[in-house]
Structure formats: structure tokens, C-alpha cells
Image (tube, rainbow, N blue to C red; front, side):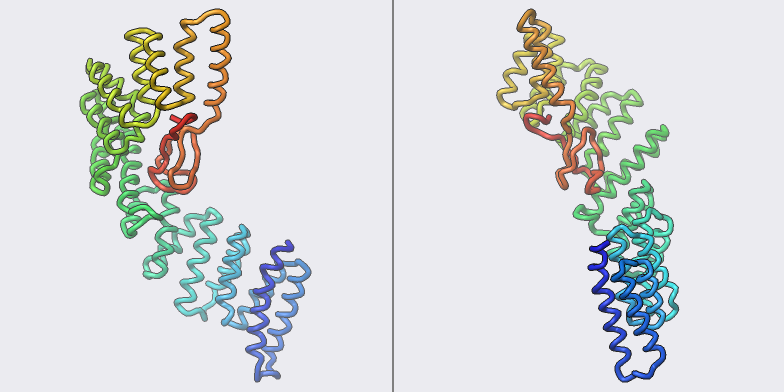
Length: 388
């Protein structure tokens, strides 16, 4: 409470300044006398930590002195930032109810009230006010990102596309890049409903906005696999890695399945050898070790991993090495390896696998939109000893 008083004291001082300004040369004015009395009363409430009563006083003063519009806008903004949204709404609704506001003042009040509603989670009300401002061509640079944020939270991708299409950038990302992600979201929804033709059309739109969109190729691969076209799926998966090598861990299992269906496992082994030279993480090493274990035995696979661990130290790699070694050990050596295995499992259990390259958000699953900063396609695998 005490810190709120210090926030509101400058506001009260501003009201006092307005009161003094209006009363110059009008000492006998009844309205000015009332204004002074209201100001003193509001200040007393404020100093006695009765903020609600003080706010009511200051709002009533607005009906006497329209010069205080900017002060009320600032006061409402302050309450919203402090999380006291009900107070902010009350102040900004009072402003909008005034018929004496000029068009600029009303637009400012509409913008502030829309942000109040948005902060309160009343997205439908906020959307209506923001659309009003867009129709009036006012505050576009502020309103468009706010409205886009609402549509993204509601997963209303069609309206999100329409809004983003009017923007050059969404945050720090080119709008076309983000719009491609919106089309991918729609394509995923269509695929889930088994609307293959619709999904394909939406993927083409994504490609038009961002020709190097790796996610578009990944969805295309999933559709091809659903249809049993493993050659098309494999081609699309290889394009995913060409466009974004950081997605390699996400596609290796699917690539392996496609090669098994096509009877081209030898080609997959060649691909993995090449991927190891291009990708910094341990995933292609482990995929190749699994194949070696099945073809040549656990000892050969363990030797291969041991050689790679010297180049790219990894807890995940060590854990797999221990797994392969356990099957060939006994007695005290087996017991010691079991202890090490338990330790590596505990290390990996609580470690995030992904990190946002923009804000640093950590997670154990891949998100196309970062839950932290809301940027798209910035979450990538963590590399290093405790990463991939």
C-alpha cells in the first residue's frame, strides 16, 4: 500500500496544479471552490491509504475539468501495469463516457481500455475496441501487434494471418516468416482432420510466404507417410535437414522407418555418416550406434560411441555407451557400470533438451512458438555435455 501512495502523490499534485491554474482570476467561482474542496478531500483519502475513495474523487474532478484527461489516462495505465485492472477499467470507462472528448482523446481512451480488457482476459471486448481503432486508422502501430497477440492466444490463425499481413515485422521477426508458421498451424489442423488436399494447399501458402520453411517440409513428410508414400516422405525429411539442420534429432526415427520400408538401410547409414560431420549434437551418432549394435553387436557399437565421445562429450552418449557395456559385463564391473548408469539417468531426467535462442526459455519438448517470448521457430536443441 505504501508504495502505491508514492505512485499516486504525483497524480494528486497534478490535480492540485490544475485546480490552482483554473482558480487564478476566479476567486469567487463556486465551481472552482468545489474543485479545491474535492482536491483536498481526495488528497486526504490518499494520505490515509483509502485509495478507492481517492480514485472516486479524482474521477469526479474530471467532470469539472476536462484538462485532466491525460492525467486520468496515465493513472489508469499505472493501475493496469500494477495488475489492478478493475481500477484501470473504471477510470478508462469514465473517460470514454464523456461526450466532451475530442477524437484524439477518445482514441487514446479506447486504446487504453482495450489494453485493460486484454490484461483482464476479456479478449472479445478488447478485440472489438481494437477493430474500431483499425477502422479509424488510428494507433495502428500499437493496435495491430495487440490484436495479433489475441488471435495467437486464441489460436485463431486465419485472423492472425490477416493482421500479420498488414505488418512488416512481428516483433523482431519478418511478418512473412511468421505468417508461414500460421499456415503450418492450419495445415496441421487439416491433417489431423484427414483433410489432405486442404493441408497440401495450406502448405503451399506457407511456402509462398517463406520458401525455406523447414516445418512446412516436416508436415509434408508426415502426410506422405500417412498415405504410404515413403519415398516422398523421405525426400521431404531430407529437405527438413537441409533447411534447418537443428531439426535433425526430430526426424531421424522417421527417416529410419522410411528407409526400412523402402529397403534402403545402407543409404541411411551413409546419410548418418555425413550428418555426423554436419551436425554438432550426439543424435546421429546414437542412431548409427543402434544400427551397428543390430548388425555387428554391442561391442562394435560401444567402440564407435567411445570414439565419438572424445570429439563430442555427451552425457546421453555416455549413457548409451554404458547400456551397451552392461550386456557384456559381470561381477564388480557390472555393479560399477550400473551405478554410473543410474547417475547418468538422474542427470538426464531433470535436464531440459531445448532452449529458445531468443529469450533463453528451457523446455523438454519442441515448441514451434516459444512460450516465453512468443517468437516462432527459435527453440532449438541444447548442445554440449548435458545436451544433444
